[in-house]
Each structure stands twice: as structure tokens, then as C-alpha cells.
Length: 395
Image (cartoon, rainbow, N blue to C red; front, side, top):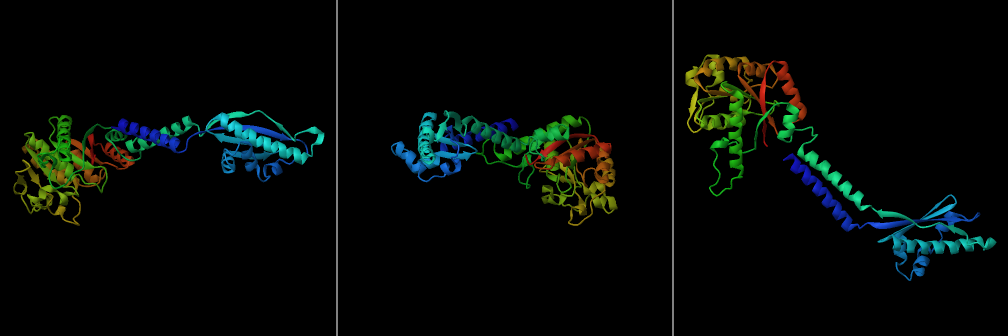
């Protein structure tokens, strides 16, 4: 995907360069140097009025005086006059340059008063300077600009995570899946696309991506049971990915418990069928029994341990050690326990919970700062947490 984006950028840059060449065609440019005799002022010669009109008259009116003015530059220097002329071909530019040189020579002779029988100017040969702008240079610049745009859009060298390739390179961990953004109303594998929808319909693409993620997590976990899902940024939520993953695993015949203990639990799609209270917090407080708190979500094919009052706005985040204590009581009853983890990655709550789990997966939103990925994974490494892989969300 990244190579296609880069290639498209190069082609776009070349196409833009071709348009520039079509709108502003390259012109051949020639140069001729004229050396006035001693006593003649090159600046005065270059500024003498009617130069363009006289040169046009020598050429039979083609180009007209305005055309001569636009295509010829006369630059005075120390003891020299430089004439540059531009036209479609070097031959045409040379004719115009020589006409201007003839007019300058006549005026120099007049100013010199015919001293010593000179014409007032010593004229050098025509020099072909090539095309301006050079077509090769224009195309090279267009291709280079297109390449830079392609690399930026494709995420190469980007400071943000724009693709699975960037995530894998910056994170140094396997990318277990890329889950496209989708509506939060239903988990991906339960959402239904219209009957007439194509295979690449967004709903079907997302469902396929989640199934691939479930397979990758199952492979990474093996016989391990507790899968802890962390977010790479404190403001990001993992509840959608955790729910999608749990439903997909349950759809493959596993007995699954989804533990909603993260800060995004209030937005969980499960809450339409599973009352968030009582939940984890009530179990910890001793006001609810664990067996009666776990609720069956028939449509998802799994059990849910809601967040409880932790899902209410303004509630303090759950402690990782407390959630880990609850996990110890339920893990033997399920093939897989998927935990939407509380707290900031690298913080004590997340570290304690990750240590209590068997497999840790870090969710990275598309566009997240690459530095945040590196910092988070390094913090987890320092805390002794082994991260099995990452997930690019919103891809």
C-alpha cells in the first residue's frame, strides 16, 4: 500500500510538471557579448530609447517591438554589453540577438563619431545556452516533489503513525491487525451490510479485519487465557477493539468473558443489553457478588463483566491490581478473558493489570504520534510487561 501511494505521488508530480511545460513551453536561449571601444558607456548604450523598435524593423516587424522587449535582455557590465535572446529554437533566438547587436553597433558607432573607422563595438560569437526552463529539470523537480508528497502521505519518515508499516517499524512489535474505523453501534462481526453490497463494502471489510485480528491474537496467545487490551494514548479508548475482539473469538466457538474496566466503557456497544451497574467496582466494594454481576450477552455469544459505576461520568479510574484480583477469580471458567484495561499505558494501574494477564495488546489510533508509541512500549518493557503485538485502529 505504501509503495502504491509513493508511486502515485511520483506520477502526480510528473503529470504536474508536464502541465507546466505545456502551459509555459521551454524556450531556447542564446547569448552574445559586445565590447564597446574605450570611451563608450555600456549603460548609456543599453538604455538608449527605441532599441526594441529598431531591432523589430530590421526583422521585418516579426517579432514586433513588444515581442523583442519580452524576449531580449540587454545587460550592461564593466566594458561589456550582454545580449540574451529567447525563442522557440536557438536559430530564431540567434537571429533576434544579432538584430539587437546590429542596432547596438550602429548606435555605438554614432556615439564614437566614427573614431579610427571603428563600428564602436567588438562583437563576440553566439553562445547556445540551451532551453529555459530545461524540460529535464522541470520533470525532475516534479518527480521529486511528487516523491516527497508520496512519502509524506505514505507515512515514510512521518512523525505520526499513518500505516501498519510505520507502526511495525516504530513499535518493533508484530502488527496483529488493522481495524478500519466504523460505527460504534455494533461490533464488526455482528454488523450487517446491505444484501446488494460488494465484498469490499466498509462493513464487510471491517468484519474481515476483526476476524483476522482474532486469529492473530489466538496464535500469539496460544493456550494463554487473559488478553489485556491497552491504548497507546490516555485519551484513546480500547473498548471498541476489545469488544470486537471478544465477539470474534466467541464466534469461533470459544467461551469468552469481556471485562469492561477501561475509561471508554461508558461508550460500550454492550450497554444496550448489559446494564453497566453493578459491575467491577461493586464487586470490589463487596456490594455485589461476582457470579451475579457477570451478564450474558446472547447476541454477542459471550459473557460481560460491566464496568459498574466506573462507567459513570466523573468516576475515578479503576486500579489495575483490583481488576487483576477479579480476573484471578474468573479466568478458570473461560477459554479467553478479554480486558478493556483501565489507566494510561505505562502507569501503575495498566502495568499491574498487564502483569496479571497473559497477553498484552496495545491499540494505536491511526495518526497517533510515533514518539508516543515508542515511549509507551519502552515504559511497558521497563516495567517487565511483554507486549505481544499492536493493533492499528481506524485504518
